[in-house]
Image (cartoon, rainbow, N blue to C red; front, side, top):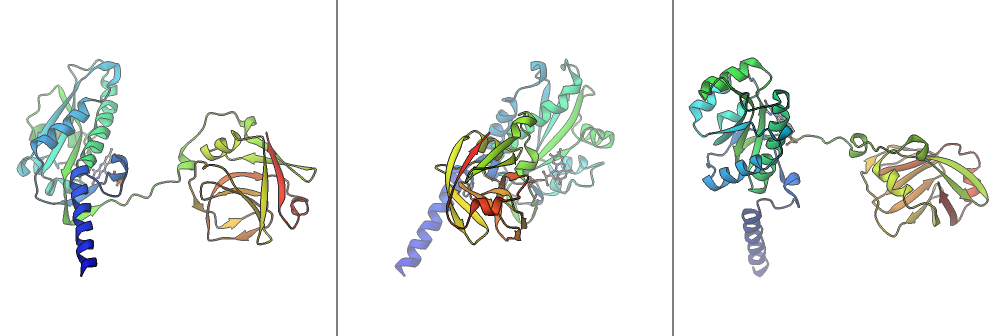
Length: 313
Ligand SMILES: Cc1cc2nc3c(=O)[nH]c(=O)nc-3n(C[C@H](O)[C@H](O)[C@H](O)COP(=O)(O)O)c2cc1C
């Protein structure tokens, strides 16, 4: 009984934290941000929330400091229905209690071609502020489709010098909401470093033999390279790998590699460097550090027990 009361108490504290801080599990607004395509709850936004979201939008930079964005706050369903014209993916407008339209003022802009970037940057800040307030949201693009521009312009009786660019539906998730479950691409695939190609190599010196290796072009590879030269006392495991736990973590983006190949140098977790000397399938996830190019004699050099490996550029 006391256990149940404690559980209920903890639940209440968790709910209070969610209300106070906007998000529960996530540490940052960008982790807490969610997209809800349809099925918003009826609960309206408060004026304070709307003003905070607008302030976030105003706070962002604009190209050439042109400050040529206007923001329309829409809370009437009838107007929102009119704004759906030309967008078959605008279901968010059927239930969202608030929509903010961002428009570029062609009379005020010095650089018309930067208005869409300005709007996108403002939108990013507004999405994060909304997440911070515990709200969900959905970006709907308007420009460059003329049909969408016309329907929004007409619904809001915008003057001709204003070009609506995008809108953000805002609110709380309803019971039957459709959220997006976007699958993030591996960060290593999306991040490119400016280091020169010739700096991507390293050598491993094992028992007097030298093996050339390539370093992964990634933040992990670069972070490993920054530790060189170093001697690692590596521990034997399973007759196919030697590992060593570093003093601190490296950037890690673990992926299921499927097949491990002889010569792979991988990071297990965020601090365990592993050199493999056999090829086999694995269910485990690793981040790539590099690869030994010519593995002839690698197994013999590594031997059957623990071994010291000198890593250098
Ligand atoms: C420029 C832009 C246009 C978008 N247009 C629409 C839209 O017309 N309708 C819609 O439901 N979602 C729209 N979205 C939402 C995206 O589909 C959504 O961001 C994506 O599913 C990933 O969301 P998540 O990262 O929150 O999971 C748009 C997003 C962006 C950035």
